[in-house]
Amino acid sequence: MGAATARMFAREGAKVVVADVLKREGRQVAEAIGAAVRFELLGVTKEEGWAAVVGATTRKLDVLVNNARANSVHPGVMPPMRTSGRTADPAVRTERMRFIPMRRPGEVDEVAYAILFLASDEPSDITGSEIHVDGGAITT
Image 1 (spheres, helix red, strand yellow):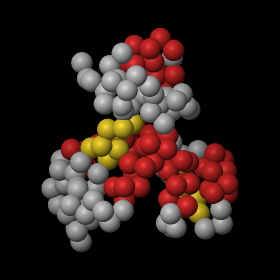
Image 2 (image 1 turned 120 degrees about the horizontal axis):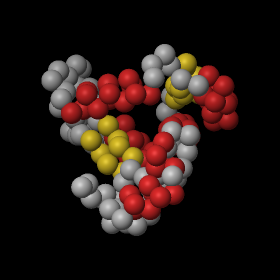
Image 3 (image 1 turned 90 degrees about the vertical axis):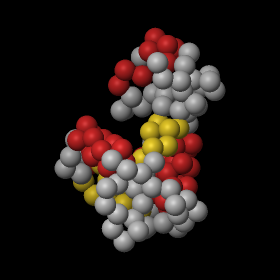
Image 4 (image 1 turned 180 degrees about the vertical axis):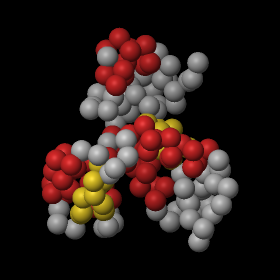
């Protein structure tokens, strides 16, 4: 998902930094995208990073500095990938799909487009929002 987002941003002319806790995989993604992309090794675990992102957006940004915007994108059921965890299990996927009106998993490019939109100038008044890219999942 991150690789798809980095590729999309690079195509749009953005300065891209690929950051990952996995050095070899992160470098491979950066090199495949091109010379204008740089790689940074992250020192936090996925869980710590996730908590920071959710915490920042669910507080509705108590303090904004220099008109910065902060939003988060929350993928639902996606194609199975390294970070899928339980949703890679076919039985779990089938059960989760019952609650998704679109009746299909999301695509990584759909998540990347949501991120690209939020990073653009168009949503200049959107901040502290959580965007769910999940086919309209119904939570139970």
